[in-house]
Length: 268
Image (cartoon, rainbow, N blue to C red; front, side, top):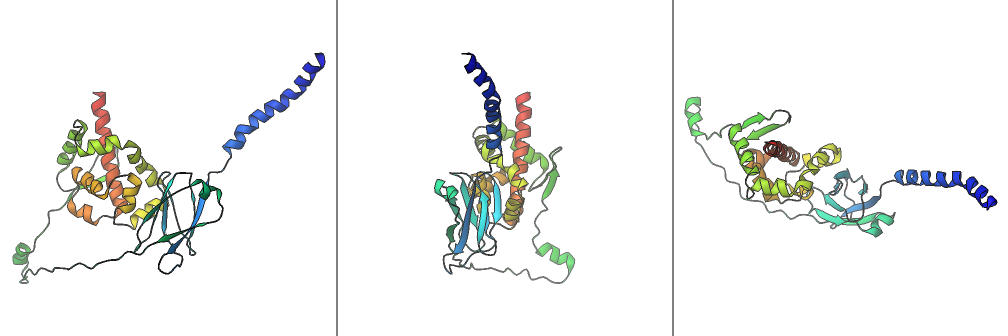
């Protein structure tokens, strides 16, 4: 018995060291990554500069000159791949993809565009400013305002009071669009902050005007994005001409306003 106690006493330092080093090894484990090559289905040539975004982790990157990319991802994450002139695709990360070190080939299909008819209206201008100013239609200027402590500018079709009243009313109306979107899609809306932090995601959105990537990241349809901006009193001109990064900032601003009003109403 005495020898057993001595042996146990001698082994205690090694057992404690093994227990302390195991969490450290786990903590230092590198996050999983996936690699791939993006090619055109028509030419089978690599596509350089394609936007690769992990929707779940809100991380992005671009393909290099050979169409290759490497991105942090976990099993069951969704990768959104897009490039101008091609149909965007979503790819689910599988266990085999994570374990396989060789890049996976992913093809993009070229879009077919149909040119629409352009109608040019004649205003028969006279050359006299006072007369021509009445003939040419002028859109009313959009109102722009800021909400204290948010640091974000709002571009709206009406006055600031109209937008605030809409957001305020949505907090108390379960059937309202903003209440349904912001209240039930809190996880998706919280991605807005992560989207602002990743330069690759921001650059991808800044070059796009189709709302496709933004829709995939937020988990809402393109029409829902338009409806949200209209409900937040943004002008039609802004909704139609802004790039996806500007639209993201607008939705983010409206969501922050909604949360501020919601917190205020809950505390009263």
